[in-house]
Amino acid sequence: MGLDLTKFYQACNPSKTLVVGNPEDKQYYIDFASVRGGKIIEELERTITHLAPDAPTCQLFTGHIGCGKSTELQHLKAELEEKGFHVVYFESSQVMDMADVDITDILLAIVHQVSESLEAIQIKLKPGYFVNLFREVAGILQTPIEITDVEFSVGIATIAAKTQDSPNLRSQLRQYLEPRTNGILTAIDREFLEVANQKLKQQGKKGLVVIVDNLDRLESIQKPSGSWQPEYLFIDRGEQLKQLNCHVVYTIPLQLIFSNALGRLINRFGAEPKVLPMVPVKVREGDESKEGMALLQQMILARAFPDLNAYQRLELITEVFDRPETLSRLCRVSGGHIRNLLMLLYRCLQRQDPPITKECLEGVIRQRCNELSLAITDDEWDLLRQVAEQKSVRGEEKYQTLIHNMFVFEYRDRDGSWFDINPILAEGEMRG
Image (cartoon, rainbow, N blue to C red):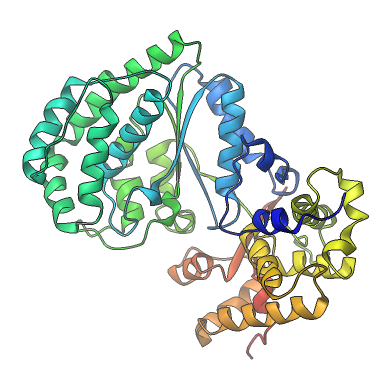
């Protein structure tokens, strides 16, 4: 079977998240758990299905932006649905302003997404507390809000639409809601989630799981309290986020793992966040990671030949690349960062149709290296050299910046975490 160029281009779009529950996307999914130092998604799933199926759980999940978290969370969703749970997954960045998020924004977004999902399967809730609350909010927003017997979610959607593009209205609404946060939480648990769980179990479901993705994209702005936004939400207000009467998985900014706030975060949530590391292109000692490289190659080839098995795909490498070494070079220079890999490939495809030549790939690598290097200060080059030599980072803010900007990647093996610089940067001169 030959290469379908149109489908291949679409499958390689770096901004596309694989929805593993979709049969076509499932063909492209590659399980990297064996090389990522642990079965992270399996651990999240087991906590829900085995350790506490009938009690609420709250788990934190993080990793570099673009390392494949959303795809893995979609995989978790599909696995949990197969086991009989009702799973509500949503991207917080689609419904909130990541530069300005407060606790009530997250709580109302969860209520909105859950109510909308339940209404789609004919579970219609109308919590009395919220009916009254929304009537009062309507006065503040000067907008009529209808809480009909048909769709409770419409009332919340009206509030969200009215405030999303207006910081002034958002501020007024928060001033009203903030003193009522505990009351809102109690109502969410007793009038909404408890009833939702009961009705789901009447339909044969095992319970409700909410996956809140993209909170790892929260911007580090300072809140009026003096705390930075990620610490404010997950540490100062973390107790309220973990109170929900259902299973919840939140993504959190990776910087929290490398800050002195980690201890407080663990105390607040009772467990360490699960971290999704890079796919290794080499091992800690510097040799190539044969298994990691093989899986990354399959990730590309599966998008080209989804109907073939792994061995058959390898025989057709030269339909996509001029030689096998070009594919290896692409995987190696990506550093095992999934979106980086697809972005480099996509840039090649913008320049020429397959088979992609070594010359085309090298041009893309030089361009990307130049783009990244322009943003790096002399002091940061010094830190990068230290990381390259020592394979470790410290919890200081300057190292957090390197990780946040994806100048440094984290890998995990049986001995724990180790770090290395983004291989694209190693293509340029490590200034001297």
